[in-house]
Image (tube, rainbow, N blue to C red; front, side, top):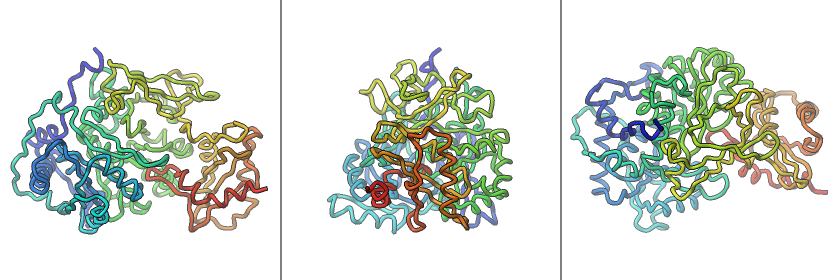
Length: 537
């Protein structure tokens, strides 16, 4: 049996409708409303959710007219359940939802995204969010503005006629799922068009190797049937994974963070959530996991979880070492283009730094430098169900991930993430500096909250250090001692000279992208003048 012989995935709206009919009281998700501290989370059943989706389908048809050629609309709203409602309603009513994360888009980039997707409908989650689209009208004649009713409107208990959807999987699999855009860290963000088939890889990853959803080799098995605080906004692939795929494909129950604090809530709020919700597990970006583990009370509460899911960036070494024998660490590996990669459970939890990629991902390792290899995906027809990137890009036969890994020295099949190819800084002498490794080592010191190593095309590398907010009596000599200790672990040709150390200004902190990773491009722009002065002779 090949992976392609397994029964096809069900369509999103079909799953929702079937469960609403067969088990109407089954919980789809939980939300934290304004009074959550007093009342706790509010359960949303499949019956309620199915009504909300049907109500949204009819609303879209009433406002936009009958769907034609999967016409596109952009939705910009608060980080609440409406994102998932509207996303499934778009699928069911055969429209295309364009996800625009405004915090990561310049006005020019937003215009390009809307132009490329032929999107002339701007849907705001409130009057203020609708108003954000007004400036588009002059630049894109024909743009229409709409305001989506609040969440309570969609959760109204009154009956709603079912919105019909009768397509089979074979008919529906090329339908648009959504359009999401790349981060834009290397230029204008690119629209990435996912279909129902390309995102179905997120259903297949837990069915390996024989299609069983209960397979113990599946690295994501802790999520099955679990209640999870999912602290990722619904505009991210990681947010879509938790808020949509986890309930539909893993039978999980995501708990949405309170809207007034956003998905990346402050540590004290996350602590309150953990105490009030008492979840089985949680998803945190690595930077949030680090912040929580630096607080003794938060660390004690985290250790009571059965599992912790993370993704988007590597977990700090000391955090993983602290938690790996206390709970299950579940890492989501993949990309916006590829979806999640299938992982197998590690035999030894202390190997948490390593990933056990299932070979049916269809990958090879191309040597890059020293013990580092790039993971490259090759089109393999027998693995189509796990290779969504080749569904998105049907003309490609090879996909270079640009992600570098090192094999375990004694355990075949285990790979340790080392960073992106573009994270390696090439000095003028062609020596390559492993910036990510050096940055990780520097932030292990609690007095350093963030660090960026650079120096592309320069004779020596530089570092910008951001000090922790509570640091006192920390002088230049203390900083040099930290850097000197780091230098002792590296060859002389990549040492950080004392004169090449910058300390980030309090009013100009090192920028991070949403997932917690460094915004290298933005930081270089912020500190361009200071960096240039380092090399003035």
